[in-house]
Image: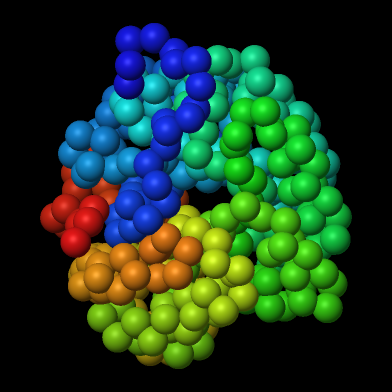
Length: 303
């Protein structure tokens, strides 16, 4: 990053069509990581894996935490897919999180140079966290709030969430979002077996987003294959296999389709690895709970 904050975001971000293939990691923040940890791990994402972005997952309600995210991202040279987290408790804490986050976007001079997009999530349609029409209204209101900062707004959702809530107005949500942060978790498909044979599942959901996404940029924001199962992470197919070789094979599969991702309408498809460490969400991490890589990981960032 530059030594001083620029005066404008004009020509700041790369063109969307350069952001395809691997772009970074999902990063769970419920632990309210220290500033030192954020700086260390964001720098690791940038230097070790050539990641461009960190996509936040979960929530930390500690005062000033997103300021620390901005600080760490600025120092590491990565952008952030910020997140207003609904959670699973059916409460209204997300409204406070929304207000706090929007406030920091305006008060922190580096925020607009770090925040690539603001997401509502995760899976607010599928989880019935909010009415679809109400969600569309929230997206529009956030867009209006951030107009002067030129920060786009989206939701983080899987194709099935949009499909299931179509009669409830999910089409209005798709109309409202600036870009698409799509979830891709083929392990949970009723057709799943091994990761190396999951491209058809991935392609089906991607085709839905291409056909219904109005030529908007697509990222696979919550995207991975678990290396273990437990309550809440259980397959819907008796043939689905969760182990480290299959987690590795899933990312190899994505790498093998780099040329496809480059050419998808809307500026190609950039994908995140969900998630940075098993300490954040067991089974999904590229790093294990011991801090070591679970398998060699050096995905393509271009082709």
